[in-house]
Length: 131
Image (cartoon, rainbow, N blue to C red; front, top):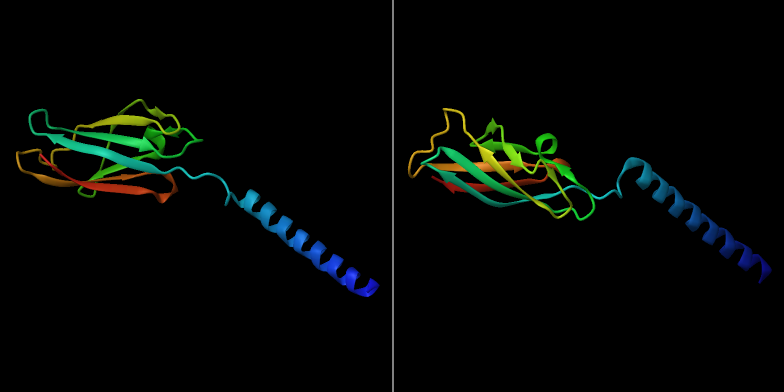
């Protein structure tokens, strides 16, 4: 029986060592870090002002999100700049964005557009918008 308990002890030690190696690798590579995901809550278009309006939520409950640096917005595949308020989105917080579109994007009555918001961690939200 003494020989059997030594084998069991070695197997348990091997399992502990492999588990520690996996945890250290995950920590060093950033695998277990929380990700930054977003949700596009609302998107609208005003044919009177010629502007688009967005509301984006930071879905992470730990990390802040800088909208200017970490969010990219496209209307019909064309990158556009957004005035965010606030720029710094707290955990589970919401920001509002105003877009003054370039001339090639029409805000005429009845115009249909697709707005895509790309966030960090390759999260994307898209929605159709009618002016």
